[in-house]
Length: 91
Ligand SMILES: [Zn+2]
Image (cartoon, rainbow, N blue to C red; front, side, top):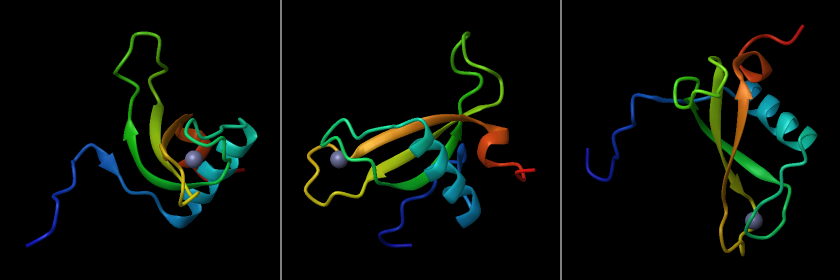
């Protein structure tokens, strides 16, 4: 399909509920944009990261964040969360 970039199979698209959880976790961790210091992000895809580093827990995911400031010079960020923090139902 013209203009369509095939998705990487290791990327996992999140549901609206999961994205809301990621936003609240990022807020709780006081994650700030490195480009502008902003605290508002839109949530992208998640990538399983538990196997990448020996000091990484085996259920960790890295989730892409994009700073929502339209004038941000470097809007890409990420947050690393455990699966239970955003994928599983919250008790
Ligand atoms: Zn920013």
